Image (cartoon, rainbow, N blue to C red; front, side):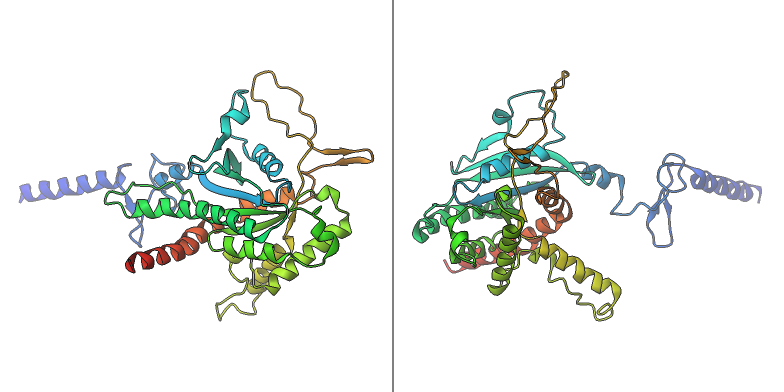
Length: 369
């Protein structure tokens, strides 16, 4: 009898020590471990779930890859646009006053027509690893046969990124984490100084064909370059023409956001449904973005002796045009929307929709061999 009482006291004491131990996991009613009562984890006041575990939070610190390609006619300002964009995005990596052009400019080994710029930046508190690809311009004469051959090179380049993922997926021993090299977005630069815009009030059919071909592999974002050469009325007119013609030809630049309509029967007609549709329409009205580049991109200095950086602008006898001023152009809005608000949706759309469609076609072709 005495031994039985000693045994029960020993078991109760052991259970009490385990209950009060800081190493003992605590589970809620759902069976999910909680660390809110652990003295070793005073920072955590919420449940540890698969979405906010310390391991997942640590992984989030790794920069998210985001890959962009710029295309357009020769002389449309692609390279200046890419270099200025890189200068504004590359804010994290300390280059220690090295020659930036030598440090981040790389030619694609498979195709010398494409040059990449790497930028390590931070948007909305999240680090992103951006690869900006520059391409050789389309034929200025807009010859359909020549442009078609150039488009073959571009689509081959876009497909090669899908092919890399497909090759990794078919390996017997696959890596734990694949590097996302897909081109998530293409900036299609529109030159407002092109003679075509002076004599017509519609979009060139060649532009429509190019955008439709690109849309099979990536999201296309139209960008009007050199907006400092346009009057306010002319810029608004070009934007209106592009929106009207794209809608007429069934092209939706914001397909990655859905159709802007709620498909939930319970939420239709509600305030949230109206707000969703309103925000979608506002996003549509932003396109095409109107941008310009400064006279000369000023490289940021990371050495101890900081040099005075002049204002980024384009100077004219009558004043200055600031590419970072939202009243002068849409560059800051483009940066916020594409690399901030829309980035994750673009990546998901490229992986879950565009790549999967390409993969299905690829497997069907292999099955017919």
